[in-house]
Image (cartoon, rainbow, N blue to C red; front, side, top):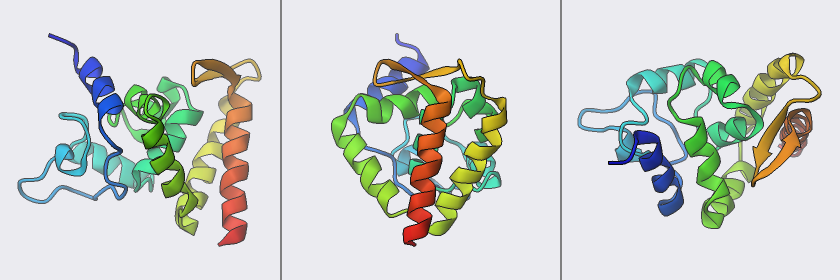
Length: 160
C-alpha cells in the first residue's frame, strides 16, 4: 500500500485543482474531498489555520508553496495540511492545472494580492541569498522567486 503522500501526489497528477474558494468550515456532511482536495488532506483545523492567515483560495496556497520551502510553508500555513509537496506537484506535473492556476491568479482581487505580498515580504528577511527552491525540476534562487511573485502581485494591484 502506498503512503498518504504518494496518494496525494497521484491525485495531483490525475485530477484538477480543488475548488478555488476555501470555506471557513465544512458544512454537515462535507469534507475536503467535497471541494476537490485529496482524501484526509484538509479538515476544519486546516481551514481555520488558512483563514487565520487570510489565505482563502487554493491559488494563494499554490503561490505560497511555490515560493517557499516545505518548512517555511508549514510555518506560514499552520502545519502540513494542505500539503506543500501536493501543491507544488499539482501545477508542476499537470499542464492543465497550471493553466487553471494562472487563470485563477490573473483575476485575484485586491485582498488576495495584498495578503500574499505581505506574507512573502515577511519571509524575505529569513531567506539567505544562497537558498534555493525547486521549480519544474530546476533549482532557482528563492529570493528571485519571492521577488518575482511580489512584483507580479504588486503589478496586479496597480491594475485593480
